[in-house]
Length: 245
Image (cartoon, rainbow, N blue to C red; front, side, top):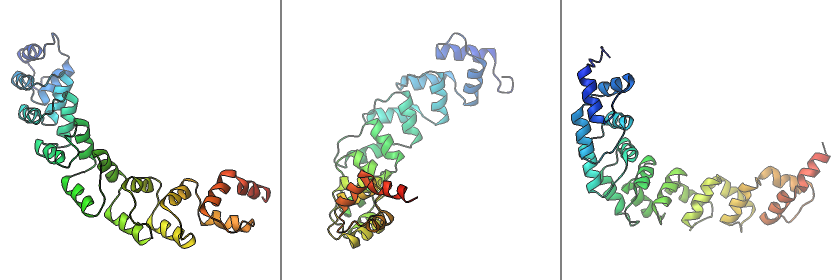
């Protein structure tokens, strides 16, 4: 406390400013280190920042200012202390919020803004997706596309593999199931009539080259993807393998 020049006068001023009759040494030190004074507390509260001491310290650490709060409130975001800190951490500005509201999905909520910024969704990213034929129907779609890396390159690769005009919702499903253009190409070579749903089913049930070869060794001919799925579900080949060990 001495190193931080904490005096009885400072302690009394901070107790009055925070409304706490007796502040702990740890809180006094933390506030002093972050240069929190009665004027800062008064300005934050005047801006509508109703926060406890820990939140005031976090706000100071993240350079959350009364001016930032006022601008976000003017933009229509009446967020609580923790959400204001989260927005500041992600460098969400009124300009960013305005840009996202012009994408056609209405005004994003605080939670949506934070999720969009965390995933690096920008107006340019949304525009590039649209230009490449990948349309989103909501902020949630944009977030999922970013999380699962639904990219123009992926779409082009699937088209080259013989799977064009894939619905955007299915693109996410393909990425979740780790369906790659190379996998799709190999399936198409064996099963020319394969569909996007077939690709997903093959990944879900782990139907690969080894499984197909195993089925053929056991005398299963004229195989289709549907038959392979049924074989996998039945466990027949698993039992056959066990009996041969």
